[in-house]
Amino acid sequence: MDMDWKIAVAAIVGLSVVASSLILSGTDALSGFFSFPNSAKTGKDVSISADLDLNEFTLELAGTSTTEMKFDQGSVSIQIGREKFYPQGKDFQISLSDFNGKITSYNGLFFDGTAREVDVGGYVKTKEKYPVSVGSQNFQHVIVSNVSINSFTHQASGTVEVNYGKTSTTVRLNRDALTLGGFSGSIEFSNGRMYITGLAEKVVAANKINVG
Image 1 (cartoon, helix red, strand yellow):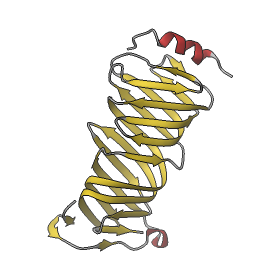
Image 2: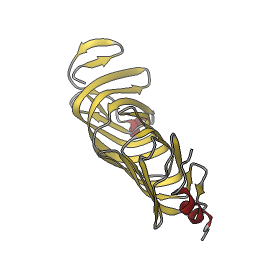
Image 3: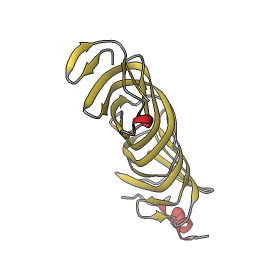
């Protein structure tokens, strides 16, 4: 058991460290239900990008990921194993390697799971897998890379774009159900928005689009 990071925890606590309508290929005012063939059967990749309001949700990750976070001053709490602390500092940064667990958006953004490596502003750095929780009500920017999601359903507002071969369609959602299945890619949180980019086996957006 590596104790170096626990010693740093004691020090860091006292330190201040530094769509209502559907658009198809650019054509407005189309309506109805748009369906792609089953991507699993065709073997073709279906790409998705979404720009959504950051509403309440809980997201279960199916595979490991790498997370980079940047926080406002005095806004983050961290627990590694049984050690809990509240680092202070402007533009404070945390990274999680091989993170596996869940992400919750409710009065802030919270991560709960395990990580092989946790780097807290260069002051605390673990070298083996630990349970880890990170939460903030005032984060600046969070990006989660190499995400794998089995299934995710969310009441979403914003735009969703799906590309399949030479076909591209964009829908605008207003508190409509968005479901992703077999997703791999990245998720970014910034300025009250959630950005999703990657590949998916299934995308269902209300009664406006269906993939898989």
